[in-house]
Amino acid sequence: MRSVILTLLGDSLYCLRQIECLSMKLGLIINPLAGIGGSVALKGSDGSAIVEQALARGARPMAGERSRAALHQLARKRPAVVKTASGDMGEAVLQELDIPAEVVYQVDAEGSTAQDTEAAVQALVSVGIDLLVFAGGDGTARDVLNALNSANAAMLPVLGIPAGCKIHSAVYAVSPGQAGEMLALIAAGMPVSLHAAEVMDLDEAAFRAGQVKASCYGYLQVPVDDTRMQVIKQGGIDHEAVALQDIASDVVEHMEADVLYLIGSGSTTAAIMAELGLDNTLLGIDAVRNRELIASDLDAATMLKLIAQYTTRIVVTVIGGQGHIFGRGNQQFSPEVIRKVRAQSGKNILIVASNEKLRSLEGRPLIVDSGDVALDAELAGSVQVISGYDQRTLYRLGWQ
Image 1 (cartoon, rainbow, N blue to C red):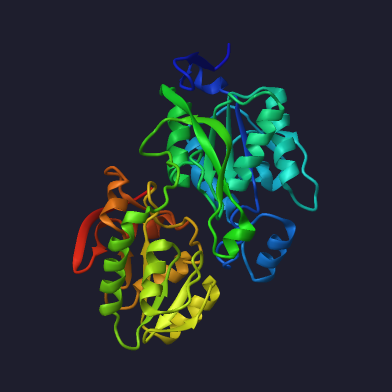
Image 2: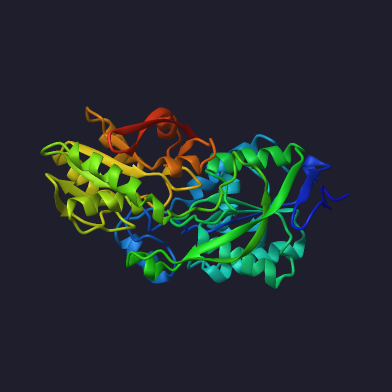
């Protein structure tokens, strides 16, 4: 008997109901190189040249670790065999967690590519699965979409574990922990609705040049869960200009002498740099001290060297519609960087966002997905968000 029944409810809404937990046919694909360019300020991981640059700069693959954070909850459910690809594309993580694995696709020993992702997904579809779990970023989501379309399996339910630099798509859980919770609920027989969620991706070349060019490439069927699943990233709108100016004026007026400010990515923080009259890396991290630019487009290693020299503050904004302040597009703020700054005295993490952006969250908490669960929990609580000139908004910062 099939372990999952899909019942049509509307245009793109389905009910996912497990009948036999232990016979549910799960497929797993991990893009082991997803997110490798994040901590070293490469703003993406697409293409072999970027991967080589990231490795040369000392980047460490994190997709496997983030997958383990999600799948360990499944391990406690004593699942049946999970079908997967060999090595770092799935098999290795399942073996570490003592989850039975059946390899249906062999990866070349030299490493995986986007073509391997597509071929592995098609192999999983051919042997029959009820739910595809994959770890990666927007590029990986596109590969999964292409493979499912090619296999005439576009309606297969999927669940994304966020592991990339660019995660604009709404097919991912909010964090690896939330992906694990979602997977555990499904494995426990919880009825879950599905809907068509956007697969978005940025033009990485334009991204590195400071231009945001995002496109929708199609839709995948994902669980409906306003708490655990990510919504599509929302950009700012023109009438927020006054609010951004007020926020920028407040931050600049309160900047302390001889303190280093690490200005994060985003249009809200770009307004701060504009108020200072300084060049800005829209999608990177810049360092400002005594209202002068001392370094641009920093990676984690460079920030650690600067933190060792100066009292430091981190300035970050909120991703509209999603709520992330760390872990989406600013992985240069590594757990070590955040911990080093927090260890210094004073108000060391400044969160800036307009009230309109906060309202776009519809009551959902701000999110930290740093890759360090203990740190995420330490940062949780009520925080003050700089939302205008001399204006603070108390908002809940959660953790996943």
